Amino acid sequence: MLRRSVLKAAVASGLGAFAAPALAAADFVRADRKAAGQRVDRLEVHRLPINRRGDWLLLRLHSDGGVVGIGDASHGGGDESTLRYLRQFADLLRGRSIFDVEWLRSAVAPTLAAEKGKSAIAAASALEHCLWDLMGKTLGVPSFDLLGGALRKDIPLYANINRSTDPRTPDGFAAMARRAVAAGFGAVKLAPFDEIPADLVNRGDYKPKVEEGIASIAAVRAAIGPKRKLLVDAHSRFERDEGIRLAERLEPFNLYWLEEVTPAQPIENLAAIRRAARMPTAGGESVRGVAGFYPYVVGGAVDILMPDVKICGGILELKKIAALAEAAGLPVSPHGPASPVGNLAAAHVCATLPNFTILEFAFGEVDWRAEVVTPEESVENGTIHLTERPGFGAELNLKALRRHGLVI
Image (cartoon, rainbow, N blue to C red; front, top):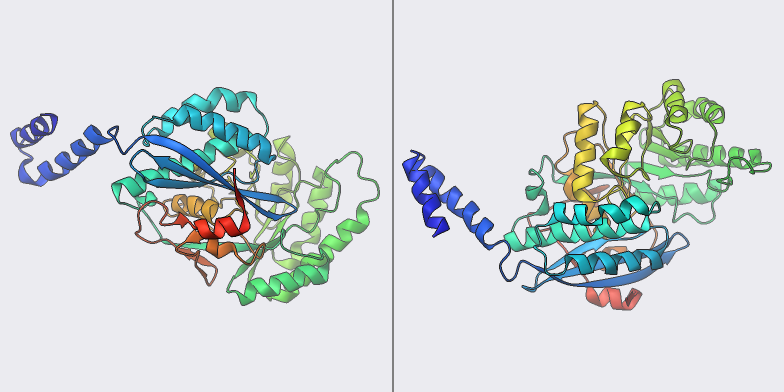
């Protein structure tokens, strides 16, 4: 009856045959979106040990129609805590429409406000990944179509070699960088100052570690050549004045960017380094939501924003943060040394962003990475190509998950 009335209204309005099919299709989706087959049923979590930096927590969220959406809740700062929040939020979602993204955001907001760590927001973000994948698969369209349509389907990547490099020496970093170049990457990132204590007050004699970090940067630049992009992440190991001096010392290496030299707070420190540095600065991997990024943008913290699709609040939040950056004239390069699932979730947003530059890729962590999803993850010449397959265009490979992980 509702569908018939919409069609009559279209004809009466003079839109005629041109508008009627589109209106009928839209009405059909509205009428059926909460019908059987489009409600959240149950959650399945797979935990895959990766390395010293943590496990991958990969999700399969089932609808009552048998469709499965996938998501990534990895690196939430504590897997056991993340798992508790996953169960809590999945209970809230059970029986809800797979289209209820904004409802989920509102329902978990009080918990996220109270929980200052990463576990709750990583869990909520991962479930939201699953919803976008479910929506695309249910409607038969790629998720990027639901986010405004693709401006690009080839998503450029940089190889983050930081987690896979062993030993963490100039020779070790250079060797892994050469592997990344051989695999087709034209951009490489390292974080060579991680051995400096994160406690800026009680660091002891850390200066030899600064020198070794700079030597590692020099070794990687020599390994990848002068034309490829070189990115350096300082992981907030420096104070403001130290950071300014570091930026000066790194000028000869022609960096694509220098990332997070100081902690995110106070913003004034990052802003001072940005003004002084002759290379672009980047950051924001731990900043949460539009509300967190607003003062970061207004304060001029960095030249390039790096929201993480697992930590910033999910796919829709990443889209909103990118719009804020676009209004400020800033490019966006999402952070995310993630699993193939996390990369797909971020890539579908990146496909739609006018101000997108390059996406992070965790290179060399495990040799079975590509087989975690089916079809297998395909990275060619440092690029992920998004297809027209529905949703994220992939499923979790259950055989591979059983070989390398366990079901929680």
